Length: 177
Image (cartoon, rainbow, N blue to C red):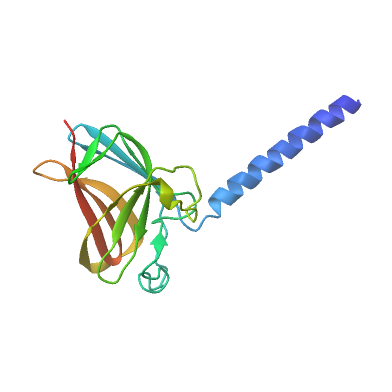
């Protein structure tokens, strides 16, 4: 009898814990998404939390200039590539990396970092693989929800692109053959 009560107690506690985890996942303000693109034979997958503007001023206010910012929410934004990529003359080996930015009023940096699996506020500069200078463009209409993608280019290669609020940042890349 005691064994049955103990067993049922463990089942109830496990079910409660699983239910609490499900509720926590549903309560996230920023949905999580995985976006994959095929670029010249390479599969590039970006996994990240997608926060929304929700009436807020983003760049220069919520995200202040001159600071390291991980674009996304909750767990670190992860970029995975099945093939080596070339960002200019920098070779990024196939694998998984986290994405950070160094924000600025007139210039930014995309930071590809070797550390993965951390929470988005954890940043270890010693793990930086490369810092890249993105092109900065204004958008005619605000983008409500943060969007990060590997966008194939018609002439080959592609670009790592971030859109949010009225800002687009992107860096070109090619797939190493």
